[in-house]
Image (cartoon, rainbow, N blue to C red; front, top):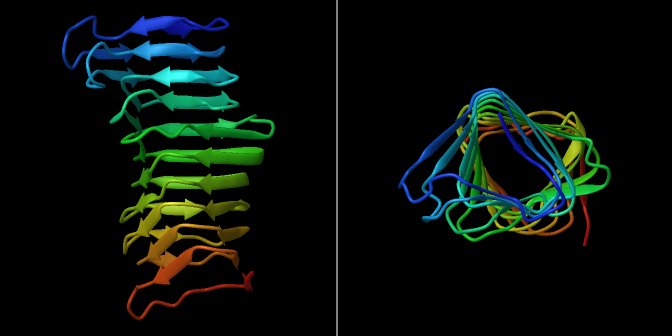
Length: 235
C-alpha cells in the first residue's frame, strides 16, 4: 500500500536516481490533502503501477512527475485543480476502471504541455456539476458520462473500438482538436455540445441532442447515417 496524506508538502520519490524505475502498488493507494508530490528525479520516465483499489481525494494539487498507470480501480474525488502533471510528457494511463464521483461542483485534470490522459479501459463520470480535462484525452476504451458535464478543453482522439457514452450527462467540446476514428461510436444520450475548438467525426455519431454554440464539427464517414433527435444552433 501507498498512503500520501496530509495538508501539503509531502513527497514520494519513485526512482531515487535509477532511470525508468517501476513502483508497483499491489493493494491500495490513497492520496489526499493538497500540494502533495509524486516525484521523479529524472524526466518523467518512472512508472507507478496501481494494481489494486486506489482513492484520490481532497482539494487537488496532486503534483505528478511520473507516469501513472491504473490496472485496478481508481475512485477520483479530487476537487479544485485535481491531478497536476508537473513536467512535460507525463502520461496517465487507465487500463482498469477510473470513476470520477462525489466532486461537488467542479473538478479537473490540470493542463501541462505534453501531458496526456490515455484510456484503454473504462472511465466513468458521475457528478452533479462540471469536470474539465485540460490535457489531450486519447481513448481506446469506454468513456461514460453518467451524470454531469464533461468539458474537453485540449482535444484528443477516440480510436477504433472506443465508445463515448453520455447517458444522463453532456460532453462539451471547448478547445483543441478532437478526432473520432472510424470504428468508434458516440452513442445516444443526453447531449453533445460544441462550444469551441474543432471535432472531426469519422465513426458512428448518435447523440440524442446536438447543440452548436461555437467551434466547428465535421462529419466525414462515407455513407454514414447520423441520428439526431434534436439539434440547436446558437449564434
